[in-house]
Length: 232
View 1 (cartoon, rainbow, N blue to C red):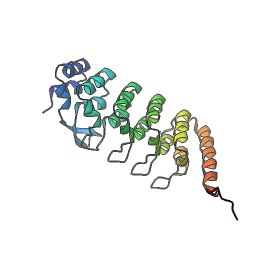
View 2: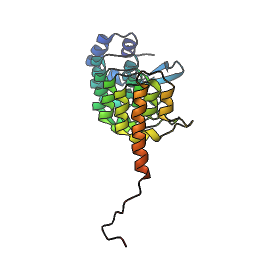
View 3: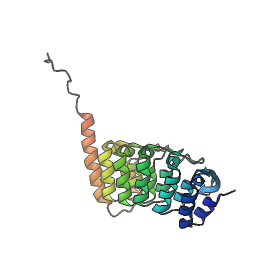
View 4: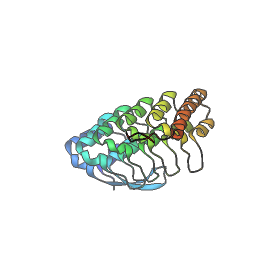
């Protein structure tokens, strides 16, 4: 049976959510089973923070939930093993909410769900604001190196959805070798880009080509001797 806090969240009574958190902080620790929370497919055991993020709760409500139960940021829901940060990025949360979660648990940005996806994958696939991508990469630049169970890196996703030139440039700076990576079906990021009608397609193609040439040259260069002794 849903708790009072869960009911307040599902009905988007955000003032009530904050009130309950302040008066009865233990309510933020109560797990609830939600039917079809993700894609209407699987039931999930969730905390109020998962529910609130899926519902698109504003910053003050998320802050109140974390204050009531700080360890909630480490807790995974049961259906896809997603952290609150995954939920936020899937719902296209604002930068302030994403950064709040990262401040509490930065390594969440490097945590994969059951599909192998990082929060960065979801932020990109759901058209997050460029500033959200900025903050994810600023906290954990290595998240650009993640790949899901289909072999998609964040660069594949960014190119596939027609992300901005700025976002793609940031990802490439964090992980230049991504231009060489292929999905499990053999697609490169450039091939993903070709499937879009993005206005910046030509600009991004040039950028990818530049990085490809630099990375390819780097891998082709002979290894230099590491010893200081004279070669004979």
